[in-house]
Image 1 (cartoon, helix red, strand yellow):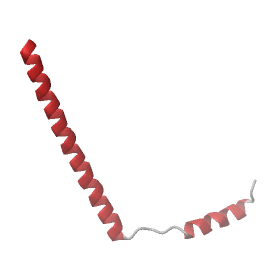
Image 2: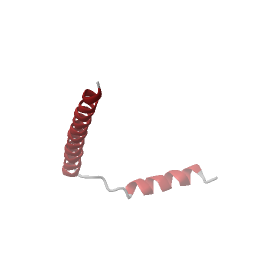
Image 3: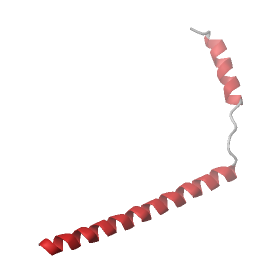
Length: 63
């Protein structure tokens, strides 16, 4: 097992290598996620609506 002091030094070194995103990058990424989530929700809503209408049509033929 490694020395705890040495481990903490290695952790500190690795954290120093992290490249944090800019405020603009975070904003753009968030907007892209929200836009794609909205488009996905609309797509599945329309697919659900189409399936529901088709099922009601088929059941109406036999019921």
